[in-house]
Image (tube, rainbow, N blue to C red):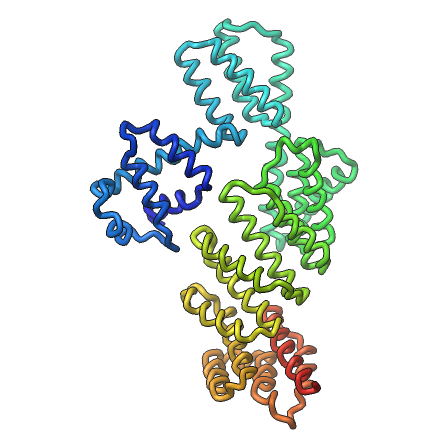
Length: 486
């Protein structure tokens, strides 16, 4: 991605209130009533496209003065956006507030304005203490030490030393657990080494015991639980993974922790709960947490994108696993709008999976017309080199099944032969493909025992990769049987 694309995406990511704030306040940094930076900003806001095309943009705005030295104006605009957004978020976000305060404190110290600097240090320290931001507290204590050394303030040295040591202890505790988490990550990549496995199990057993006996301090509990969560996920212990994920969620949602609330973290924690619920097939519970994601109040554009991604991914999985296709048109319209809005901010893999899973939902709901239209759209919107062979195989099979359902037998037969030629090794070596070929070829023959072939396919032990394909073919073939009976 080049610099021009990054600037365009930055502007597109701004909320309406952020854009309004920029427009109002950017004039403070300009001598003109409407500078080239503001004109460029407004032009880029109006330039709605799935990607930024510099030449097309210049062609649209060739009469504008900012085009004369566009590279400079873009750099200037980027810096101006960042400068105004620092100011915008300073009162809304503690991290921004700390950052701005530190700049102001350093400036006041350099100017020798002791009283003002101290007043801001004490104010910032109280805020950091309330948020349990020990790293920021340490920074502010260091500022205090500067004033103590210069004999500009008097303190009780014993109280000051005790407070300093308490902060260092809290930071040391966090550092220990952060390093332990890194150690667990390292050991999880070496599970084939018996000594490393033994070391890992020893660490996990210790954390489990500490957690069970409630010996882990609140200050670090989420990090400790996160270590267990990572381990249980790696060894596919979904019961334990769910228990610890719910513990983390409950810890996070406690009223006394509300002052530390971050919606980004909340979304990730609920995602971890959903990751544990699905393999346990607790689908009613899954819907509860999907709705929780949907109902979170989200302001930042980054969090809106994450909310759309997490909600959409899990609701698609829910519908595919429960065969609940109620209100499917409204849901897929929401997905289409989200893809159009966020396609620059979402990875190609996520976008492909969204489009692919929507096709599966329509296939399972027997809306074959929609399947056919979306398969055509899929190939128009997704470059072939971005699509895995697995998805291509799945889509080709669905297209063949849809064509047979529409009684377009000649086209379906031709596509089946083409599909077999393109995947010769699979049809030769994978038993699942041999049975699928037989079902597709002969399903309409009155002398063909379709149910027997479905039973063979169902009983066939096959590589897990093709289980989804097997399930879709069985679903389609059973539907053909049901229609014949009726």
